[in-house]
Every structure is written in C-alpha cells, then in structure tokens.
Image (cartoon, rainbow, N blue to C red; front, top):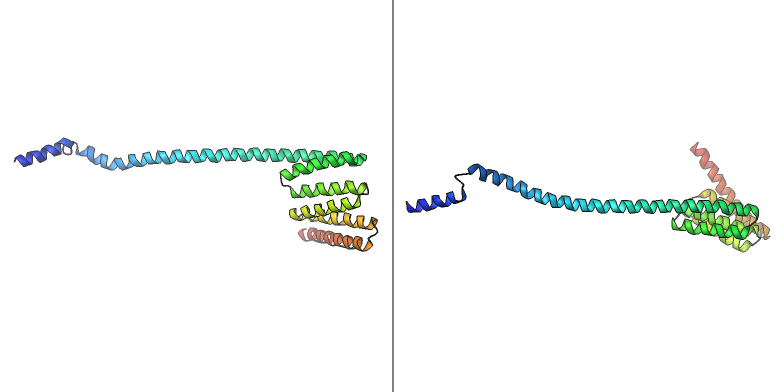
Length: 195
C-alpha cells in the first residue's frame, strides 16, 4: 500500500490526474507553439530578405534613372553637335559628339555609339581628312553590327564608298557602293515582306 501511495503521490505531483485536460491540450498545442516560434524566425529571415531585395530594386531604379539621364544628355549633345556641323564649327562639333560618345558608352548603347562614330567620321569627311573618316566609319559599322542596325551599316558602307571615290580608288568605291545597295535592297525587301 505504501508503494501505491508513493506512486499516486508522484502522479498528483505533476497534476496529470488533477488536470488531464491541461496536459492533453499542452501536448497538442506545444508543437504549434514551437512551430510559431520557428515561423517567427522564418518571417524575420524573410523580412530581411525582402528588405534586401527592396534595397536592390531601389538601387536598380537609381541606376536606370542615371542611365536614362545620361542618354538624354548625350542625345542633347548630339543635337548640339549637329547644329555646330551645320554652322561649320567642326572642332566644336567634334568635341560635343565625343562627349556624347563617352556618355553612350556608359549606358552601353551600341546603336548610339555607332551613330557617334558615324558623325565623327562625317566631321572628318567634311574637313577632307579621309583616312580618319574611313577609320571612324569602320568603327560605326562595327557597333551597328552589334546592335543589328542594318540601315546604319548600309549608310556607313556607302559613305566609305564615297571616300574611296574621292581618293580615286574606284574599284573599292564600286565594291562599297554595291555592298550598300545590296543591304538597302534587303532592307526594302524586309519592309515589303512585313507589309
């Protein structure tokens, strides 16, 4: 009997018999409480990850805005360069277009970079500096190819043909003119096919 009393005493010590509902609920609720604690940690980690993602998105927006701003400035410089060319201020035009070129390079705009090289080549062409013009037209072709701007490629090849003509290199001039015509024909065929 004494053994039984000790055993009953132990049971009553933890209250299993007195509070069975409490212990049953505790056994079922405890895992949820633990999971809630883990979920709070998970949510805190997610919040940190979300904050980090949001910060990166904000940085990306700032970079995009800066790039758009740089492109707008470069576009304005090109317009100013065109005005200098029309007025015959070639040295000022060259400086202005080179500034635009530097900005276009920062935003990795291959078509606009090609346009700048084409414009620089034209400035040299107007000043009868044909070797420099040929070099810049070749660079413009390279960037036009990177951007897939076929009309620009055809234009620069045609301009190189004109320089070869002025230099008296008629076979090279004819070859470039033929290449330009072939590209322009292909562009016109593409337009007709698309229509």
